[in-house]
Image (cartoon, rainbow, N blue to C red; front, side, top):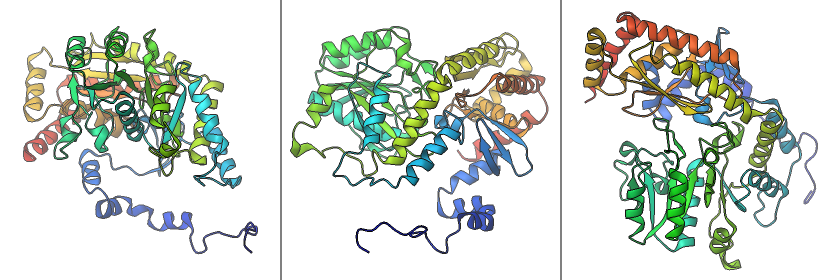
Length: 472
């Protein structure tokens, strides 16, 4: 038997039936999570009425057991760039499993990683090599390590309000204190304000900076780097022997209407670029760090250092197949162009409402990464209610909008960060004009109710105030 492939049907796990298991115990989903996983997640979902039971999903929509459809404007925090269960990605995964490749032997070179790297690099021709890991935070960790080793310097600069991941290295360049609290000591890194070139120059003069890591558009608040900042920062960094790292984990792969968000500013060519999320097709975790040849050659400087940075599941066949399928679909279906056109349409229609609703402060973003910011109203009645919410906890009004969008209109959105009055829209990149119409119509209804000063939205607001005060 040694060396022979298994007989047809051999090797199957006997006694395991996934469908039967889900049918028998799927209804316990929230109880199981509360008992064995993060107990605060189901508690939070119950509190805001997000404890739905979705039965199936396709494209930009979910369906519950009653057959009601929900519009997804969250895309799994950006993972579902092509929506859910794209047939081309599904077929690629079936094909790679059926091929029974000799995967992850660790001491050979399979073709799929090289093919995916070649294809990824074609979108950023100034870069030369790729490291494949398993997530966005791992892609950032790789970039931080490579920048420090390549420059021989210890310190990384990052921007206030940045989000780069939650593992120890990426956490140390995370600009949100709520994520950092209690996990010190972290790496000796330093924050600057996004767009502050004077602060960047001041830190670079100390001579110990390896790199600046930056999101071209920050996920927290949907704040874009000011025009000209990335190019000027790149020139300053290079003049001082430091590197520019672009974190495109959420903004990359078409999200902003170009393949990468940094490409909106001519001349910007980051030394390292981090991608993940949408590259997975929503199926297999994958992250990638793209970089210049000299950086990789310095890190992997000899055969003794061949495994100095690696990942046990990096470059696995399923992830590589998913990534190749995703890039193929993006080209064949002109996904980046759709993100640009639908993003302009959605953002334009929402921006036109700013003058109509005094609680609506600003609509910003690029492509299908849009921030809707609320602000202090002028009329006395609304102002008193706004002040009540702000006194309890900043961010409650945005949550008051998110909840009826789901409960009444079956549209899933998110607040764009803790203590922010901003809703972030990052739908699948395949949304169409009917989806845009549905969201804008629902948003108008919620705004009408909010400006009416009564009804369920303000009843829910009072509930949120009580909870916020109770948890102080």
